[in-house]
Image (cartoon, rainbow, N blue to C red; front, side, top):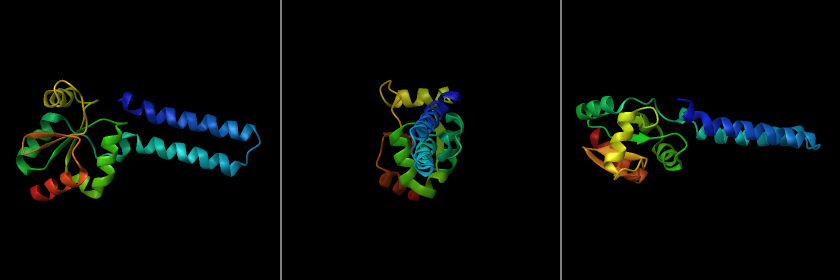
Length: 146
Protein backbone atom coordinates (compact mmCIF):
# COMPACT_ATOMS: atom_id res chain seq x y z
CA UNK A 1 0.00 0.00 0.00
CA UNK A 2 2.72 2.51 0.89
CA UNK A 3 4.57 1.91 -2.40
CA UNK A 4 1.67 3.50 -4.27
CA UNK A 5 2.01 6.67 -2.19
CA UNK A 6 5.79 7.18 -2.38
CA UNK A 7 5.75 9.36 -5.52
CA UNK A 8 2.83 11.56 -4.38
CA UNK A 9 4.39 12.04 -0.95
CA UNK A 10 7.73 12.97 -2.53
CA UNK A 11 5.99 15.51 -4.74
CA UNK A 12 4.27 17.16 -1.78
CA UNK A 13 7.55 17.16 0.16
CA UNK A 14 9.48 18.68 -2.73
CA UNK A 15 6.76 21.27 -3.25
CA UNK A 16 6.90 22.19 0.43
CA UNK A 17 10.68 22.56 0.36
CA UNK A 18 10.50 24.58 -2.86
CA UNK A 19 7.80 26.89 -1.48
CA UNK A 20 9.74 27.34 1.77
CA UNK A 21 12.83 28.19 -0.27
CA UNK A 22 10.88 30.79 -2.22
CA UNK A 23 9.63 32.34 1.00
CA UNK A 24 13.13 32.32 2.50
CA UNK A 25 14.52 34.22 -0.49
CA UNK A 26 11.87 36.90 -0.14
CA UNK A 27 9.48 35.80 -2.89
CA UNK A 28 5.86 36.75 -2.33
CA UNK A 29 3.54 34.41 -0.46
CA UNK A 30 1.10 33.96 -3.38
CA UNK A 31 3.92 32.77 -5.67
CA UNK A 32 5.06 30.23 -3.08
CA UNK A 33 1.48 29.07 -2.53
CA UNK A 34 0.93 28.71 -6.30
CA UNK A 35 4.06 26.60 -6.68
CA UNK A 36 3.01 24.39 -3.76
CA UNK A 37 -0.43 23.99 -5.34
CA UNK A 38 1.17 22.79 -8.60
CA UNK A 39 3.13 20.13 -6.70
CA UNK A 40 0.01 19.05 -4.77
CA UNK A 41 -1.98 18.73 -8.02
CA UNK A 42 0.80 16.65 -9.58
CA UNK A 43 0.81 14.46 -6.48
CA UNK A 44 -2.95 13.98 -6.78
CA UNK A 45 -2.73 12.98 -10.44
CA UNK A 46 -0.01 10.44 -9.64
CA UNK A 47 -1.85 8.99 -6.66
CA UNK A 48 -4.32 6.09 -6.57
CA UNK A 49 -7.08 8.60 -5.79
CA UNK A 50 -7.98 9.33 -9.43
CA UNK A 51 -8.57 5.67 -10.21
CA UNK A 52 -11.74 3.72 -9.46
CA UNK A 53 -11.53 1.35 -6.50
CA UNK A 54 -9.36 -1.64 -7.34
CA UNK A 55 -10.49 -5.21 -6.89
CA UNK A 56 -8.56 -8.47 -7.08
CA UNK A 57 -7.71 -10.02 -10.44
CA UNK A 58 -9.76 -13.15 -9.82
CA UNK A 59 -12.81 -11.12 -8.79
CA UNK A 60 -12.37 -8.79 -11.78
CA UNK A 61 -12.18 -11.72 -14.19
CA UNK A 62 -15.25 -13.30 -12.59
CA UNK A 63 -17.23 -10.06 -12.89
CA UNK A 64 -16.02 -9.52 -16.45
CA UNK A 65 -17.22 -13.01 -17.36
CA UNK A 66 -20.68 -12.07 -16.09
CA UNK A 67 -21.08 -8.54 -17.44
CA UNK A 68 -18.57 -8.57 -20.34
CA UNK A 69 -16.86 -5.36 -19.23
CA UNK A 70 -13.10 -4.94 -19.74
CA UNK A 71 -10.57 -5.50 -16.96
CA UNK A 72 -7.81 -2.90 -16.65
CA UNK A 73 -4.55 -3.81 -14.92
CA UNK A 74 -2.73 -0.67 -13.74
CA UNK A 75 -0.29 0.68 -11.17
CA UNK A 76 0.04 4.10 -9.50
CA UNK A 77 2.47 6.53 -11.10
CA UNK A 78 2.21 4.99 -14.57
CA UNK A 79 1.78 7.87 -17.02
CA UNK A 80 0.06 5.63 -19.56
CA UNK A 81 -2.44 4.46 -16.92
CA UNK A 82 -3.10 8.07 -15.98
CA UNK A 83 -3.61 8.97 -19.65
CA UNK A 84 -6.06 6.09 -20.09
CA UNK A 85 -7.96 6.98 -16.93
CA UNK A 86 -8.26 10.67 -17.81
CA UNK A 87 -9.23 10.06 -21.44
CA UNK A 88 -11.93 7.57 -20.41
CA UNK A 89 -13.56 10.10 -18.09
CA UNK A 90 -16.64 8.89 -16.25
CA UNK A 91 -16.87 5.71 -18.31
CA UNK A 92 -13.73 4.43 -16.53
CA UNK A 93 -15.85 3.58 -13.49
CA UNK A 94 -17.75 0.99 -15.54
CA UNK A 95 -14.64 -1.16 -15.98
CA UNK A 96 -12.97 -3.47 -13.50
CA UNK A 97 -9.64 -2.00 -12.29
CA UNK A 98 -6.86 -4.12 -10.76
CA UNK A 99 -3.86 -2.47 -9.11
CA UNK A 100 -0.97 -4.87 -9.78
CA UNK A 101 1.00 -3.48 -6.82
CA UNK A 102 -1.75 -4.58 -4.45
CA UNK A 103 -2.69 -7.87 -6.11
CA UNK A 104 -0.02 -10.52 -6.82
CA UNK A 105 -2.48 -12.46 -9.02
CA UNK A 106 -2.98 -9.31 -11.09
CA UNK A 107 0.76 -8.84 -11.48
CA UNK A 108 1.08 -12.48 -12.55
CA UNK A 109 -1.72 -12.06 -15.12
CA UNK A 110 0.04 -9.01 -16.59
CA UNK A 111 3.37 -10.86 -16.75
CA UNK A 112 1.68 -13.80 -18.46
CA UNK A 113 0.16 -11.49 -21.07
CA UNK A 114 3.35 -9.49 -21.69
CA UNK A 115 6.18 -12.03 -21.98
CA UNK A 116 7.15 -11.71 -18.32
CA UNK A 117 7.00 -7.90 -18.18
CA UNK A 118 4.67 -5.92 -15.92
CA UNK A 119 3.63 -3.57 -18.71
CA UNK A 120 0.56 -1.52 -17.83
CA UNK A 121 -2.07 -0.61 -18.65
CA UNK A 122 -3.03 -4.04 -19.86
CA UNK A 123 -6.71 -4.26 -20.77
CA UNK A 124 -8.44 -7.63 -21.02
CA UNK A 125 -11.37 -7.59 -23.43
CA UNK A 126 -13.28 -10.82 -24.08
CA UNK A 127 -10.41 -12.81 -22.58
CA UNK A 128 -7.75 -11.26 -24.84
CA UNK A 129 -5.04 -8.95 -23.44
CA UNK A 130 -4.25 -5.61 -25.06
CA UNK A 131 -1.18 -3.75 -23.82
CA UNK A 132 -1.34 0.06 -23.65
CA UNK A 133 -4.34 0.32 -26.01
CA UNK A 134 -5.66 3.58 -27.40
CA UNK A 135 -8.22 5.08 -24.99
CA UNK A 136 -10.71 5.62 -27.84
CA UNK A 137 -10.54 1.91 -28.65
CA UNK A 138 -11.09 1.00 -24.99
CA UNK A 139 -14.11 3.33 -24.84
CA UNK A 140 -15.50 1.63 -27.97
CA UNK A 141 -15.03 -1.82 -26.41
CA UNK A 142 -16.76 -0.65 -23.26
CA UNK A 143 -19.76 0.64 -25.20
CA UNK A 144 -20.07 -2.76 -26.91
CA UNK A 145 -20.10 -4.59 -23.59
CA UNK A 146 -22.65 -2.41 -21.78
